[in-house]
Amino acid sequence: MKAKKKRRPNRFAPNAGLGDELYYFIDAHNDDDAPDGAWWAILENAVTFWNKDHGTNYDENDTVHAYLRRKDSGA
Image 1 (cartoon, rainbow, N blue to C red):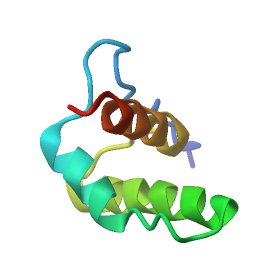
Image 2: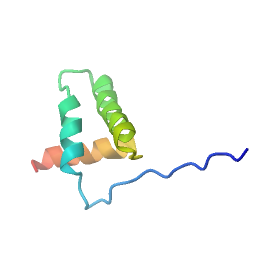
Image 3: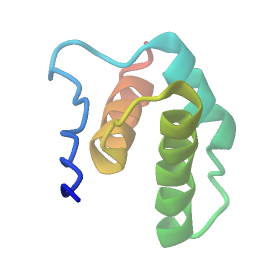
């Protein structure tokens, strides 16, 4: 039996930005009152749920960083 080939994550190009649907999906899970470690895990879990529902393979950490960059920019 062949070993499964590991898929490379779909990564965001630094200037491409985060799509509106994914941004608002993560934003709906954003709980500013959660402790820092739990807050970060909640955001990463939102990306995991998105990946499962949409058949994507976005890197959770990179996607949360992209979300926060967009949130901080006010866009």
